[in-house]
Amino acid sequence: MKLEYELIDNNNINLATSIQYTIFPDECAYLHYKYSIDENYKEEKYYIAKYNNIPVAITGLYAQDNIDNESIWLGWFGVLPEFRSKGIGKQVLLDTIEQAKQTGKKYLRLYTNDDGTSTARPLYRSVMQLYEKYNNKDDYNYNGNCLIYTYSLCNDEPKKWNDRFANIKEDIEDETQGNDIWKDKYNILILSNPENEEFIEDEYLATAFREDGHRVTVKWVDYEEELDEKFDIIIRRNTWVEAGKDTTYFKEKNDILKERLSRKNVKTVNLIGLDGMGKQYLCELFKQGKQVIPTVDNIQDVNKFEKTEEYVLKDNNSFGSGIGQKIVKAEELEKEFKDGYLIQPKLKFKSEIQCYFVGQKLMFILEYTPSRYPDYPKPNLITLSEKDSELAYEFAKISNVQYGFQRIDFLRLENDDLILLEIEDNSPYMDLPKINESLRSTVINEYKNNIYEYLRL
Image (cartoon, rainbow, N blue to C red; front, top):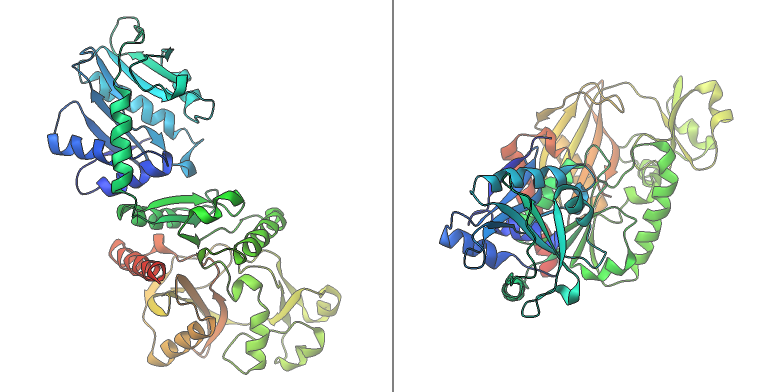
């Protein structure tokens, strides 16, 4: 695994502190980072580790020559929770050991709490060469649960620390002051699915909020209830599952979460919308004569369609994913239909048009030609005619999403007319990896400002 390391400086100190806060929610490294930047001390440097240009971890080194000039210490090492169990932590630690060898010190050391809850403890024991209890009575020692680990950077055997004063209490004091400095930042929960291949989009957003210094946690919809009211806002993102076998479990956990949060005073974004309640809204829009793909929920209303040879049967709770969707011949429709299905005619069309909004502001449009689920072709960035733009805005107003993302999807028919395919207002995937960096930055900044506006209400 090839990781890249970015030195923490005044340009990224907010991002680094936000990552650190996510890993160590009761501690603040800001003053440590600031000291290393301002003093430019060659043996006190901290880094953000990146994988595919996404921040995944932090690490650093510092010396205490007034205590022991043979040792260099590991400082603020940790991996963001959503990237754990992927080998990243071990690689960062090994890379930091190589960096430590360049300092000319004989030993790399670290101290940590050993109360049994540390997720890094197994890693330390597998990589570091020696560990010992630390019980210096003049220093902070995590109530007797402090361990010091040692790794020899030279040919000598690792040497025990032997309870010499390690000045841990000064670090704790700096962390407390840092907490006071950082207390006005937002605490944000982004609901996502790290196992989904589209997860990178949500990490773009998490990084953007972290760059502003806010504390960002990324979890799936089955997170612990006691966390609900610890956040200023809960943002629902791409939490969908990718396999049909997982949909039942997902729906159960998703429904529990929505019901639970509806009873609490917590601001949420993209948690509940038209699409989150199934595709029944398409039937209602069709009845109203809107420019929408013909959709009914019973056999009797099929006569409202123009005659067609094939129909699409779609689970009302398909969540726009294509899971549970099938195509049937006209003569098989009555046999294949069952309660809970929606019926649509199988239409010939040129392309699929996806319109991407922040709140009620249209940001960009992608066209997929031809559209084939699940292997969409590479899209083209396009502009719409005035008439088609008005249609997109009409459906955006119907969904009434003021804060967060929404995506309005259309089919372009063979006569060039657009008809609504679906309104994705419930954790819509926004295709951010598919647009250029400049446009992506514009969209993300608009999104952040939209969320901040909501938080200020």
